[in-house]
Length: 428
Image (tube, rainbow, N blue to C red; front, side, top):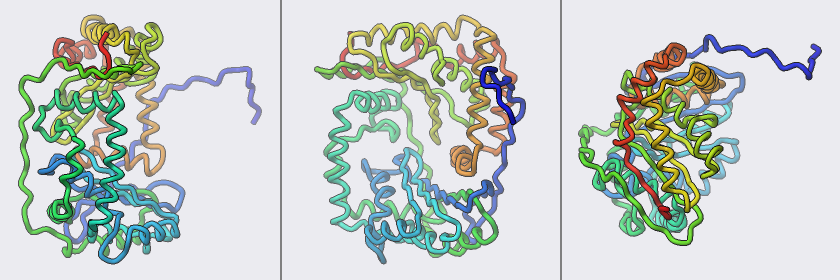
């Protein structure tokens, strides 16, 4: 094939995307399991997601420490032995705590799954949270936390969450340095016993998943020997009704200030989500967004700025975030608010809308490029109990949304007067 490198390749619009649909089965003990059999490499990924995020903890840090310490030793092997075995098989286990879930993932060659799944089973079912391992773990995390708290972006993040949800809400509680001194082994054991069991999780299998893989997973996780007979009560928490609209935390001797603006909106369960996602993309959801053009390119206030729709299990919120020059933080907020107002008052130009649509279609296409990308895309909707047609609806919305619908959604959800504002650093 001869290529003429002086001629630009033809531009092709994305018309359709082949969006796979995971197959849902149930293990012998009833665990909901989703199967994504895709890819060309003999690799398997197992994601186990427990309803065990910080939403469920009664003391700060417990959910995160339990999740991250799963690989720090079990009743049969030490953390070093676990690490050595995983290295030997070329496997990797990643624990990821979130506000709603405690997630554990195993990446392994399929041929080594009979051995590596034993390690996964052991750390999930039999962690010991040994006192010496716990103290070492907490000491390292405490040192890292102290360093992170010196950064304005982390100060702003914690303050923003507290403003948004309230200081006593699970999504809004700030972690304090003294919280690391209050964690004890009993807290970790009790939390694990209550939430890390077969009645409180879902599994996603991706990669080269055949009947042998399913059989192995069923053999190791499909029995009732790790079920909790106690029913976990639902937890409802009230969000603060009258949030503090503006909060400024001064930090001297900084060259940049971290700013966050946002509000509680909707999450992925809501029928308006896909339309609001288009609006968010126009505002700050990609490198060519309006916020990037105005705040970065035209004003030169920052190297980067963006906005995001965050979907938690119990609520969703919009956040606009950046680090700007400390001497222009007030100007940056003024210009951000002007861009939000513009979305409500002026129809988006057809060329800009087509550009955003093409970007979003390409981004959606990349979300299904390979088995692990597919599993990551579906994990969030599986955890939120959303139907598999979520991405088909997203595709339809992106292709069909009009300028009139965009201005209507912006007026419905993004009035600038309702945005809370957080500044950490200097406010000039």
